[in-house]
Amino acid sequence: MIRGLLMCAALAVTSAACAPAAAAGPTTVEIVLRHSHFEPATITVPAGVPVTFVLKNLDPIAHEWMVGDESFHQRHRTGTEAVHDTRPNEVSVPALSERRTVLTFATPAVLSYICHLPGHEQYGMSGQLTIR
Amino acid sequence: MRRWLIALPLALISVLASAVPALACAGLIGPNGNIKVTRTTTLAGYHDGVEHYVTSFSFEGGGAAFGSLIPLPGVPTKVERGGAWTLQRLIRETEPIATAAPFRNALSATGQKAEVLLTARIDALDITVIRGGGAAVGEWARDHGFSLSPDAPEILDFYADRSPIFLAAVFDGVAATQRGQRIGDGTPVHLTIPVAEPWVPLRILTLGKQPADRVDADVFLLTDRRPALLPNVPSSGLQLLADTSANARLLNDLRSDVGMSWVPTSAWLTKIRIGSRAADLRYDLAIDPTGVATPSRVAAGLVAPGPALPKLPSVPDGLRLDLIAAAGVMVAGWVAVARIITLRRRPV
Image (cartoon, rainbow over all chains, first blue to last red):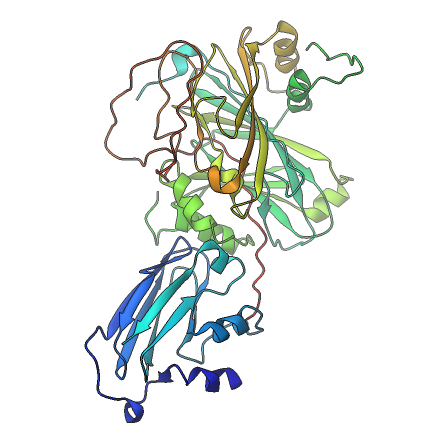
């Protein structure tokens, strides 16, 4: 709960009411999860419009796609939730599967997306999301 | 493709466990739990186009559950219990006991399911030979209790793209206990595998390790002639500890073990010690048993599989050193002992 509130400073779940004028940029982004890495590892999306993220896990192991700022990630490095399926910026992606999530980022920011399964971040499973 | 059988080669591999963690171990959360395989010693020999692969799994009883996943160069035609002393005899040959012991001188498309080719039960060890791409094999392993480390998908692809054959070995802890097996007791397994170009997987030993972790292993080769190797030995991370004609006593001892009648009457013994950072060990050991040609760079994992590569000029004198930075990731699968760490989901 608290985590969700804190995240609102950087991003907001799809909400047309709070969306400012949209900047140019993709509104659908495909991210491939392969060999325990994100492809691409750097993404730029517009602020103020819904962005659909298509997460394709080609690995035979589970991954997760967690988007937020450093304090968000620091909490998740020692978190206790087994599965993420209730917040659009926290997505568990089972092995060899695809998940979609829609996010609207209210303001420009630079966030990270990381897989917080044990050892995955250390292995290089992280990326940077720039909102303009 | 050059066939090696004209040289009647025999290769031996002995992979010895490092202190932590043991080599050749694969993480497993099995139905019986509390099983751990900590050490695998392996012998692979060649004769008339057939590989004889002997390995041993040590039962360690309590603690976390473990199994082993081993890439193979081909489909075994036979899986049986191995001889009792072959592996120990080979170790003694190059690590003699100081107190003058008697032996002193002596498919790979994602989405396809892995195919189970063969199953066997040897003592308390359940053996399954499977064929499939990296994703399919990983999925199979996961479905059968293995928990794969984050580097597993890439490494499974590394092998599966060249030889999509893997062997999974799992101890039945209940059966082992009922058999009276104690911690440290080994179960030797002998595989008979028709195979073409031989190579020894080394990168598999990094599975589940952190980049700075050490990989320590000993690899024994016994070939008809002094082999050519790629990467060459010695080189960074690879020491040459034995490079000599195998003596008759050793060969006789090996030949006298169960299932070892194929051992030739003369052979060349090579012992290689691997001591490397996991991050640096991104290649395998390709072997030309004839010693007169250059081993395949593809088999060594230095280049990815693709269109046929031209053969490099032969260099007849000695072992070759060509330790190129391993830009290529794909590698042929011959035999390997895989360690897959137990990866319990840490809730976040």
